Length: 79
View 1 (cartoon, rainbow, N blue to C red):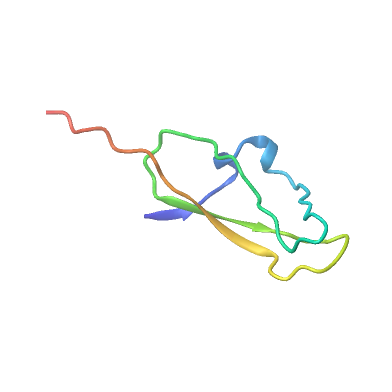
View 2 (cartoon, rainbow, N blue to C red; view 1 turned 60 degrees about the vertical axis):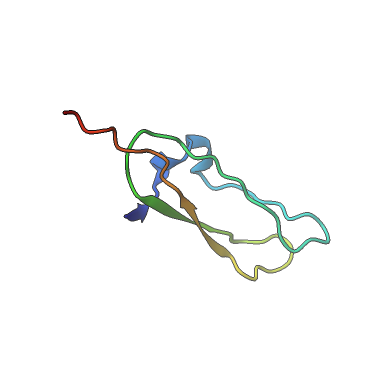
């Protein structure tokens, strides 16, 4: 199973547009996103981050895809 992540999978502070700074003399940087946990048993979910409008330089690869791995399990069956 897999699906697409949506705004409910991330804290509200991360769903709006933001800014990423790549340090001087570097060609890349890490981007860390927090996930809003839940207790739903669901498949892994994918999301896309797209960079645009650089103020200096050009973007090589502007889009990346990430995966939120499900960590919830079904409860044992009742007998």
